[in-house]
Every structure is written in C-alpha cells, then in structure tokens.
Image 1 (cartoon, rainbow, N blue to C red):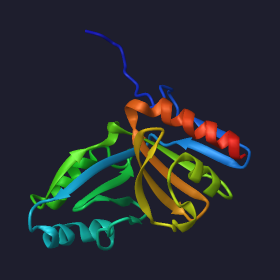
Image 2: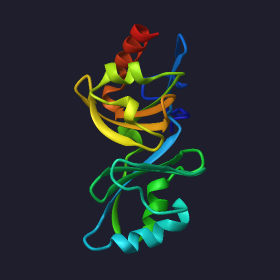
Image 3: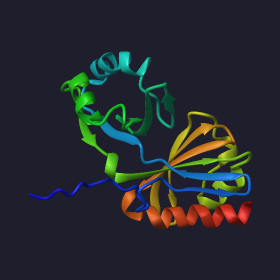
Image 4: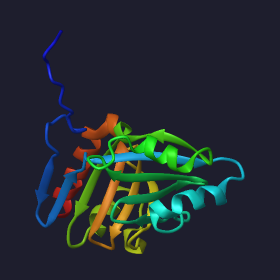
Length: 190
C-alpha cells in the first residue's frame, strides 16, 4: 500500500493560484470554486424556481444576467441553463447538494474541474476587455454575463463590478493559453 498523498493543483499547474500584477491591473486565478450546471427539464421551470428560491435568495437570473449572494453565484448560460458557483471549501460536493435540493426539476452536471476561473481587477478594465474579445465592456453593468471568444476559446464573462472587476471562465484544458492572452493584453494596456 502506498503512503503517497495526492494534492490538487490549480489549473495553471501550480500548488497555489497564480496572481499577476501588471500596472494597476491584477489577474488572479481562482481555483477554490465549486461549479455546477443545471438545465431545467421540460415544463418544470416553476418547480425549479420554488426549490432554488431559499438557496438563492431570489429567482434565477434572466438571460445575460447573474445573481450574487454571499454563498452562491448564479450565472445564466443559455435558455433554461445556469451555472451555480460556490466556495469549494464550503461545498466540496456541490453538485450533489444541488441535485438533492432541486430533485428531478433539472439535470445537474458537475463542472468544477472543467473550467479555469480568472478574476481581473483594476481601475478601468474596459480597454483590456475590448482588446481581449468582441465585447462592449462600457455597456456591461454589474451582474451582466455574456459568452464570447478569447483567442478562439469559448469563454463566459461576468461583470462583477462595472468597469472594475470581471470574472472570466474558460476551458481548463486551455488555461495556460487563456492566461497568456490575459497577461499579454494587460501588458499592452497597462
């Protein structure tokens, strides 16, 4: 029997998340998130809302929107589909928690290791966002969410604080490429 202890790595391959400060911009890898997707089943919209209301403190977000609470962030990802994001430390089996909460009203899929999450923070992120992708960053207000391509990678962009904080979810298998793009553009606008 082996005495080897396995320790998880962040998406960029380090034991701790990478933080890059470039001028007034900060790019932070955020690995401590449990991510679960839900897709409502046919004609179960109202039931799903009823079951999730206590956990979310309100209704599921409408298209192009996100809702943030102290415990769970809910992001609209498509028609009848949402990502639920929480702290991994507080919710190590988040998909199972959600499944037991919503019963058979929606399909639940574990997404935690499928995505890399970067928080980008700075005084004016609009030039950075506009160079990264075809996005009108000036029009995005806190809670707005959109899908777009960054260097041919399908990403989800969430405006956490207008002009000041964005979260980008990208495919974990391309974490290094996405990080390289973020850093390169940050150097160009800093």
